[in-house]
Length: 357
Image 1: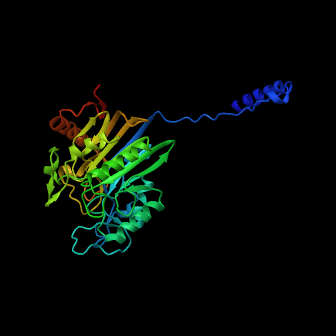
Image 2: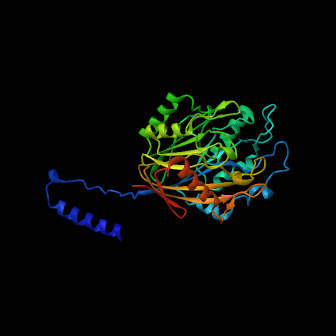
Image 3: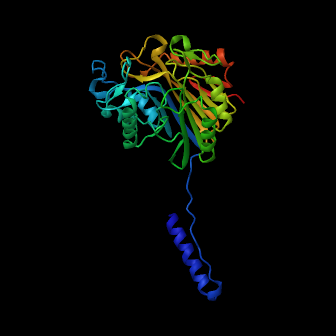
């Protein structure tokens, strides 16, 4: 109908112009209106290690991981405008692991390729297991992610800050950690410059931080430099705030393997740790270690937080996330946010949250 109307108007105009002299001829052009989304839904999960064949396949997922993630959770991830995860390990076939490494995660390519099928778009390669198969593993991981069309950051073998365009929205993404071979967050000036650069050429900037102490005793946010196994794991609170001050819109934290508080800071969203989302074999999943959220964040086109949801997940041993009908991680996040951040500038209504006006 619109095309017919435009054609008739063009014909009328053509006839009218025909009565004028050649000097008064005008050129009429069509303007194509593109409908862009006014709100953006961004999903983030924590650590993903879907299965390792090192040193053998005794803890490998059944059916090569075909049924590893519950369909209800897959629907949440796939329905996002863009979805993030932290990849713990190397995607590599038969690559040797780092000498002396007791806990090494070597993910076969056939399993690593499922990240795209599950609905993820952005992948962090900045963590302490990204080098489990040395440089060969980093390169094979990047090759697999590129083959499946995923955008990644974190490795020194690739650009620090990257962008991807989806449905008319440009997302900037950078992943940082304190580990060798990664974009090191201790290089403060360099990381902040990368974030400012991403902000200048993106609609929404997402930063992934792998840091903090580990285990059930690391659920609280200390607001101080965290030391674990003799390593400086960063001040997650200070870093997240500084990154937003420099142009980040969303900060997804991970590393403690447990869930931490969430916050709205200067209108932007921070999750201080997203815990273990899909970690099959080789991870401690007892108690709080086996509980994690899928965080669904809704922003405007400039990254300002409008609302969000916490989808509670549990991982029964040996792994593979399923919905937690008891909503235990939701309750834990609310408690931690109240205790550590005095509510974090958020109001919770059921499993939804909103910035306090």
